[in-house]
Image (tube, rainbow, N blue to C red):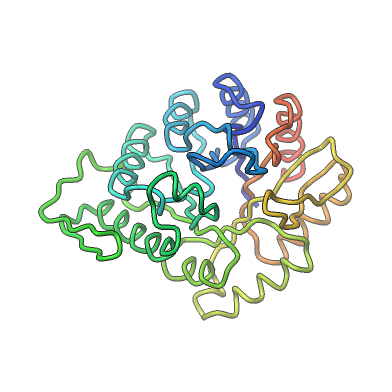
Length: 295
């Protein structure tokens, strides 16, 4: 399995130096990609580590010149909160300046108050995401015209220049709902769920693979926590969802990785600080451990 690493652009340990340290350590550990986490303006006392967060897209622009070969992604960009034309321009610019290293995961988002803060419609976010992905694809290919009623956008004779380095942007689709699964099959290059306890996750994968013939061969790339100082291989998300993580128990780690591989997972996006409180030294240690596990 290939693996990527989520950098600390959020939480207590987030800083320019922390981003640089983790990014360079991950690149030296032969990871395939670096990922930022996306939120913009969370409500106070949200119960999440995302109230302190560096912008996900801008942070990639910071990481691009201090790294050499790792790919650069966002897991997962909440496009429906934003103007998708501006997003397309930002992403194309980073792809151009990084010499074609950009990739993306996109999700609908889940915090209604955050959408309100940005003046965005929370209730049609799925339709807005679908239309936004189609818009980005169209602009990426150099198409001059595009129209979407749900986005309220009509482009005519538009110029999208300079062009991105890659001819096609890799887009994964985050989420575990049936709508997210269908979106991954029809609009995405991979399905990008959070890793849940193996019994639950096995059922989710079966549900995903059973949707259509195309789903049977679609790549699965999971987001999974890692904390080598923990004895437990499970934690809870800010919304209370049970998720698995790699821990200090190496035998259990190998069992988890083997099970994920048997389920068809081909890519891991590891999160060395799921709660935003893990020290940078411990995050570096987690990256080294993961590199050894997958070597």
